[in-house]
Length: 336
Image (cartoon, rainbow, N blue to C red; front, side, top):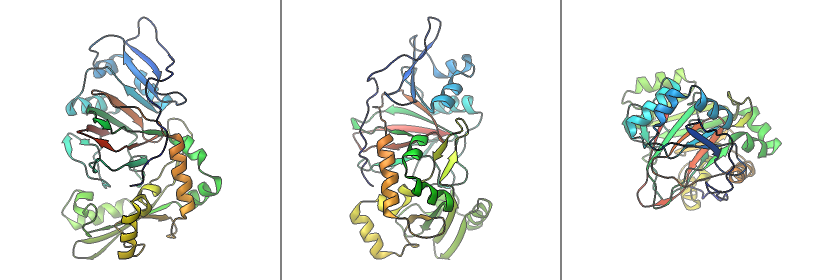
């Protein structure tokens, strides 16, 4: 995938207190300079984030709504079960990872590993499941083991990304939406069985019909889907217009040049394992993709993971990604 080139702003630089008093259990500070995202650190040792959530009313929910992304650092570490309990207490219900786009392993009750791509690959900034018409409102990530090198989960304010995309590009995407085309059964991406978590073709067809996805069985194990959905949305918590799609990630140009070239020599535009088009079915303009990627690069922020960190992300207000890494790395995610 295409390397990310945005400048990293490290956690801990130019931190300025936002709110704290002697009776507070948690200190709230900016995550990095120049961003709305915040970090929460306990003022007492051994504080459990689940206990703080239970005893603090809407404080954490209000921080997520106002700031978009909240890092919990210095709390008692959570395992998969603990992350699920925190996310359930916060949101009431966790959602499964349906209509999958990337490989993940279920490690608990709707708690998953983060995307299992090779460590040398970058995962571009994106909003979770914005390639669908139904997406999680909140993401909960926890770091069990940080990488020896790299492996950050960068963030980007989706409203600021939206405003950086040139008006002509925004207007084209908002008018037509984005068409995501996926060809399953080629052995080059997820199988349809993994993507839809079933071996039953009728279940897949019914799911697609319910969700407005055009499904075409092509013989053997081959399935082609086309789905036209939004390019922008109005974030429910903030009311701001945000950039909300994965056109730049699904498009074949997100792959290394040599891989894109080989795929284009082997497949036509609608036969590629996955690709993004304008909603009317016409190919994306490379200039538009360049503008989108530049907007993400300009708004990217990142911090080094520490073991026990939890990040709570408003999935509409903030995009996230993954940087390449060396050594072992373990990050879990729950969606609500």
